[in-house]
Amino acid sequence: MLNDTLLLDSAGPLGKTPNSGYAGPEHCSEGVPLSWYVLRVSYSRELKVQEKLHESGVESFIPMMWRSVNVAGRLEKRLLPAVNNLCFAKWTRQGIEDFIKGYGESSPVHFYWDRTSACPMTIPEKSMEDFIKVASSLDEDLIYLTEIYGKLREGQMVKVKDGPLKGVTGRVVRIRKSRRIMVELPGMLAVASTYVPGEMLEII
Image (cartoon, rainbow, N blue to C red):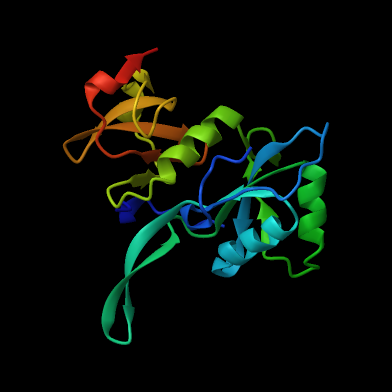
């Protein structure tokens, strides 16, 4: 489940289903370099924005999780965004700028800016790929972190060599008495997997 004290409330196809939060491209711009951009989406419209990105042929991802919601007095589990107002899109900067302008002056979509470089924030391809693989498991024991304390970064870097997370690189962390693999998106957030047996890990 999501650590409620750490909620972020600021504003190539991997074989995932739409329910996993991943939406693959309908087409690609050959020869044009693409990057994973972080988008801030207001008014909880992230899923609608993702749908529009998908219609434009853009690869995107929204971390999702199961939550219990009250529906007419009954608790139901629904798959909802794990982090508010956040969407990742793999496109060119110009493509995203044009997409944002398409909404007009009241656009709910904006770049998430890197305060150090004063440029739109981008995520390295490998980091994003690993993050998507862990987050797309949709396991109820996944943990999302938006504050990475120093002790968590002291964990050994490893690579998962077998199982559903094969190929994922991250740090070994112990959270809630369980050994997990934490994949961090620098400057943004991290996701900690469910328990991973030691024999499935390779130190790097």
